[in-house]
Length: 198
Image (cartoon, rainbow, N blue to C red; front, side):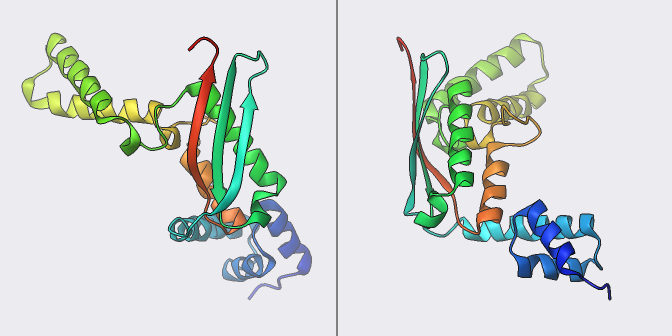
């Protein structure tokens, strides 16, 4: 078994934001291999985050973002479990990043399920007619429509969107990472986007 020093635990804590005991456990489980310990914590953190997503979020903050040109603004309600987490700089930075995402992408809803069914039906009809006009075989049209709707939802449902700051990560993944770091459930409750003249 590897000898786990306090310095190693401290380094892992700084790199992951996870508690000291969890960091020590991860280093013990991976024989002191720092990269493996990070992987171990991420795997555990994400599964922990999913379990936490069922817990109630009665605290949080209302965050406002006004774009530099003064023509787009966002009001966002971001919830967590405790006032302690809501007051942290990390939570405020998360709210700012999500608000900037909303300002830039103008999502229709928080989740794919939240998008108005009429809009989804309209998009299905467009995708189906396009596939027919493109001469696609009838047996693959349903798959084409399904793919088009998946793409539409990934562009118009906030949690499904790729981050404007890092296209390799979705808004949902950003939230999951924050849940793992804070140890609390975090939920986007609602948002309103304002654009001048709209």
